[in-house]
Image 1 (tube, rainbow, N blue to C red):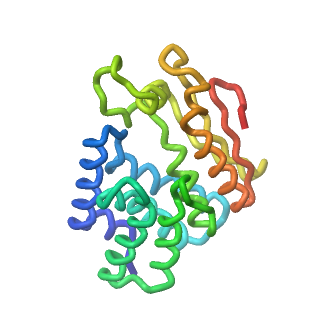
Image 2 (image 1 turned 180 degrees about the vertical axis):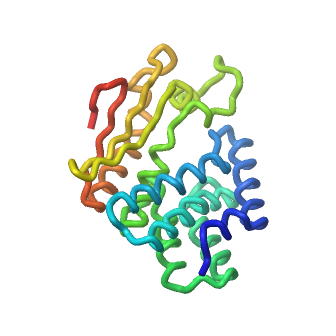
Length: 219
């Protein structure tokens, strides 16, 4: 059985993740390396565990989260589809069974807001885990005066948490934003599509997605 520990300790997989992130660094993107993919892996697994999914489903969520951005090795454009195909090959080579490969490839191929749809519970958890990773430490540009809007919004987030309340049937992305650095409107300008996708993903899981910024609910 292929486990998350096997995946995260695979030298080839880690090389691909590292090189994919180097490409995004050259393009001026925020961090998409091990901190991001590990955060996504843990959050996706916590979501599915929290709503009562089985141990193996939770493990698959961690694997999908770790591999979800590997398609950036090919190109940022359509990276979710490229990532699904790369992950398919890697997992098949390791001997994972077809049903589990299919579940992971489907989730990865549908995680991006450009073309993704929460077609499965695993895809839904991956979407929410990925789009909720907004934090200052993802910004790699050290010159605040040359920040673009993505740098500015991520850098302005001084605290971020994703909170699942099964009793209320809600999952809440709770942010503290320094409005001296970025306005709330800046956040919505670049992340509105992601938040709408998170809402659809939450509905797939039988939850309501909520966004709270500086103690004010927006969704």
